[in-house]
Image 1 (cartoon, rainbow, N blue to C red):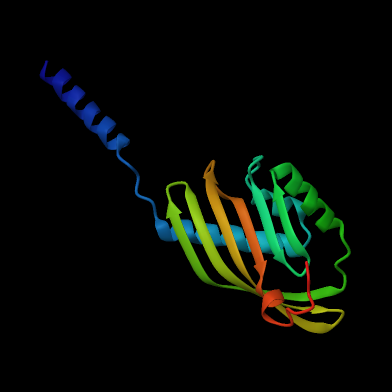
Image 2: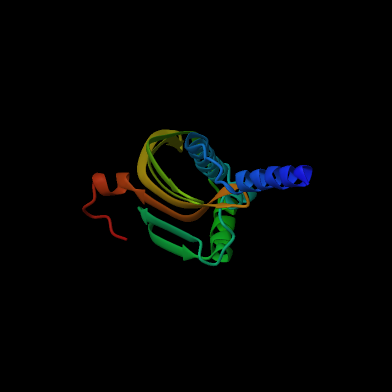
Amino acid sequence: MKKSVLFVFIAMLFAVSGCSKKSVDIDAEKAAIKKVLVSETSAYLKQDLVGVLDVFAQDEKTIYLSVGSQGYKEIIGFEDITKYFRTSSKSDWSAYTDYKVDKSNWNIKISGKNAMVYFNQTMHFKMNGEPMDTHSKEIRFMEKIKGDWKIVMLAWIDMSFFEKDVEGKTF
């Protein structure tokens, strides 16, 4: 009888300890999120359709927003986002070379399986051999899906468009 009671007591301890919340390493989660967002930009600049789409949630509510010199774009749904990036990946970008991307001012708030991310991005490149720079404000809402961080909402605002020679430029 004593062995049975001891066995039940030990089994209950294991069950209770298994039900406790696992601690989350916030620094590791932030590093994983940054890695996804660096991968997103890298894949986009390489016109790697598979790499770009891999970081997005495959959901009809996934959102892509951009504001800048090419106007305002709002694309809702993974299927339409796929069409947009497929067209982009097939475009001729041969005039653009020597990309260097800097991301700074990271602000990441993680709440459970969701994260709100805000950062600045500066891109240096050459267009037809001439040096160019852009800088943008980037916002991502992310969700951890099956253990991986995925983009649920991307917002890109080209600040260089708004900060110099705004007069005369229209959407």
